[in-house]
Amino acid sequence: MTRVLGRSGIECSAIGMGCWAIGGPFFEGDTPVGWGHVDDTESTRAIYRALDLGVTLFDTADVYGAGHSEQVLGTALASQRSDVIIATKFSNVFDEQTRQIIGHDASPEYIEQACEASLKRLRTDYIDLYQFHDGMYPIEQIDEVLASLERLVEKGKIRSYGWSTDDPIRARTFARGAHCSAAQFQMNVLFDASPMVKTCEKLNLAGLTRGPLAMGLLSGKYTPESVLPDNDVRGPNAPDWMSFFKDGKPSDEFLTRLGQVRDILESNGRTLAQGALAWLLARSRVTIPIPGFKTLAQVEENADVLSLGGLSDREMQEIAALLETQ
Image 1 (tube, helix red, strand yellow):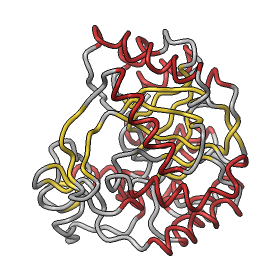
Image 2: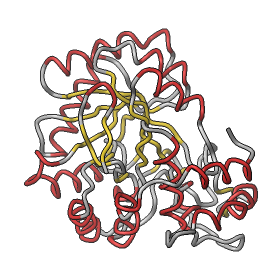
Image 3: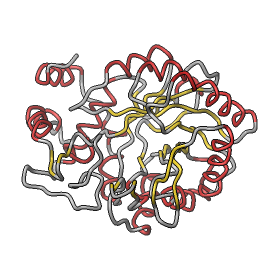
Image 4: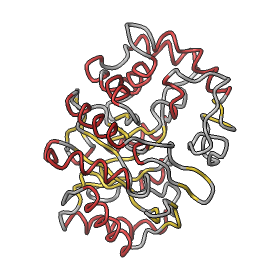
């Protein structure tokens, strides 16, 4: 099962693998923005297993683990570079030694510098999809960013680019760029993003959906009594934008919504996570979910959706009625 990265024409698996978690811990001040301890050996095994199961798209960012995610991914994929699609992101300035985010930069000089650094960590000479990681960057300053990305296309450093933003206006503005092919935004069965989907469909952009499992809530392993550790992005010191977990515990609101649709998602032999990913595949022809992983078992469960396919029209209608979404 495959999809196309928007106007680029680049074909990839209908589900990608999100590589945020395999970067390990990193911080913005005292706020954790990683997913705790990670085992690089297990991460590498999981990447190879994803390839075996037909996954060809891997989404990361230079800031994940302060460069560590790109390094792990680049090492694992070096011998199979021509068989995979690599998406990464830029704009966060970070210190690799302290694993701290220390600023943000979207100047032409920094974009070129960040791209070169990612190419080195990824052990490749080109990036398939290069994504702007500052979701609320001022629109009036975006032309300079687009010009910088077009120069990278001309140099053969990147094949296409996109914006990781939840704002349809910003996505439309970025789509003025000749080689803009995607937008990345938060979306899952518990949190629809209809304006972003419509924008992507209208402009022929791929919609990479981050948080497809609601930061793990849709894995089914969390209860109202669950408590996340301090060094987890979902823990007690979570950043303000974390909505699916509050004070280190699953959100009551989203647990309730999950309870309303769980039986449908788990029908026909699917696991809860598989049902959630199948909902995204059925939601639109442009959506490409990118579930995160830390283990081989998670990759196997998620990648099985490539053969299971999307939910039926009837199942989608039942879920919409239960959640009162359109």
